[in-house]
Image (tube, rainbow, N blue to C red; front, side, top):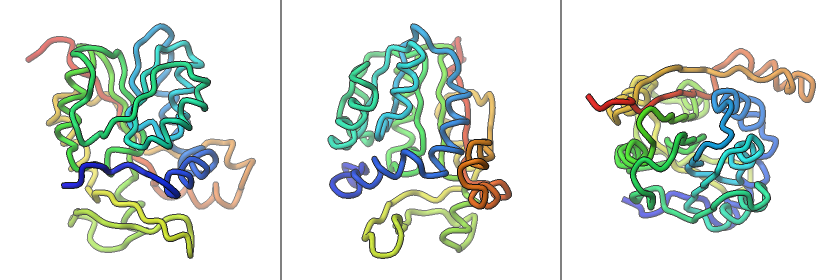
Length: 236
């Protein structure tokens, strides 16, 4: 098992730039996740795999006390700048146990990170430990149907893949686990969380104005899968 599944070097630089306005990030994932995050003023929140810090900044804007972690030192530095140094920003390998005390957070957010990890069950157990009873976990991932359109093969087979990103000649690849909706949701449930809502976000109206052609493409196919979960207030 690799000890690090984070983005480094040129790939980190590419992601920091592309994540700002890439349609999947800016017009699908972020609007859905930010709507689910809701009002968080005064809450202790954890941004898991914070990347360039878009969610950390947004939650800080809403008055949250933000802690953000990522395995990439480059992206942690970018995230800290993005959030205006409002919060605590730590480099931490998500394949390893979390460096926080039990019941430290009211909310944990993990956007487009989960499918990259190997130690997913360990991370879910750790998140259940550090999220307070009754607290929330929000997770988004690439929709399995989007992966099938992109990579082909069987929807049901699963397994790790290396996929090219950044267009011809970029030389960048990302590694992730292909999984069905069933597998994804059941891993969350097996991790001890209760499912409250499942979303397949459609692009926001802003994309229609910015790029009508891209809006039309994304408005007819599932691209992102998002779940809102809660740690039970009382243990079974």
